[in-house]
Image 1 (cartoon, rainbow, N blue to C red):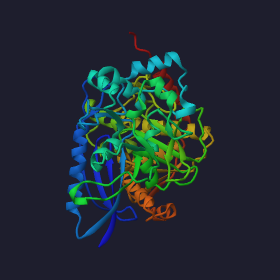
Image 2 (image 1 turned 90 degrees about the vertical axis):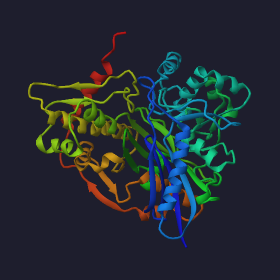
Image 3 (image 1 turned 180 degrees about the vertical axis):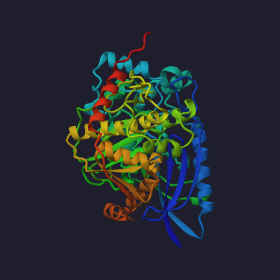
Image 4 (image 1 turned 30 degrees about the vertical axis):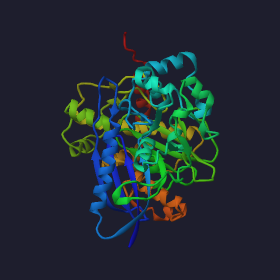
Length: 492
């Protein structure tokens, strides 16, 4: 009977359950999207029960699609990070929808902290700036705005957790209230030095410790599945989605770097066992921790808009009908005609961390065509990538090549532009579902079925993009465009 491994990948847009071999090659999968709930401008919620039910459905359908007898020996769980759920530990019912990582309703809460402290006040402990992105501010909003939750908090019946924690608690039915160091490191409540919840931070955010999950190493045992098709299969890995993608790319050496490009862009570089705090706007986060070993840390840059920018231009402005038309703009034009688009729809993340920045189109003239605008959209994603890579190199990490994955990487013209603008070699893997394969393979590492060296050896490259043209002058223009986005103020 064939022994296989698997993973639950609960992303911002949907849930996937994948069954693969020890090389990370996909044998079966099932994917279901979930609703994007937007009650107000800047708000984004997900229904935790829908995500849980979709996860169970994906497991059942992927099992059904497997041809022949097989034995699933372990699974990993990977998830959208920072998104938080609050539920009653007796009824298992959520108090409200999950607040998603990109939701900006906590703007005023963050502003209160910024009025009291410098932007990087928490960074020495957590590696994170004060920003709506992180879980602590979302939890505080939940407590302030949900009276039932607030009442139950005093009686000790409330459980908080990121999506991994919610799924593990429900799928094991053992009431294992657990998370891993990578997800905990995105809450702004975990101390990077101790890898535990920090008492001072909990007091500052008024969050009781007994509501939070136990923090474990990334490839610990998180319990066993209680689903008929795979009853008793152990969960031997939990990783945030960007960290799982990094494992899928085998980023086990200092300086190894990846860029996952979906609705947003997430660029991560291995910085080794020593905590480094960047002065250039990067996050410091846990890349992974093996059981009974020291953690490996990473610098991370988050770009607020990738695929979301293309969807906006296509659906709201009708600038193009399909990807082919967008890509053709790089053939139809020599350059962007002097047009720069800064996609600051939710402010600007790394390295600026300015949530007052506004989306900006600059450099328009009578010469401007739709092809120039289309090309400017493609280039903006590449310039934002360069912003982050530049910050990493200023912070002392030499980047030689960038491993790429995510939906946007299927566009060859975009990838070539990115290689040109960053002047870095881009490595496009054969296994493009790096997040799912990374979580599954790291679960296998937890069971000692795989080693890091074997994951490196299993890495197969489909294509390499190398820079053919310099954009140094254009990048200086881009930096001026960003300054405009940062300085434009709304009149209240």
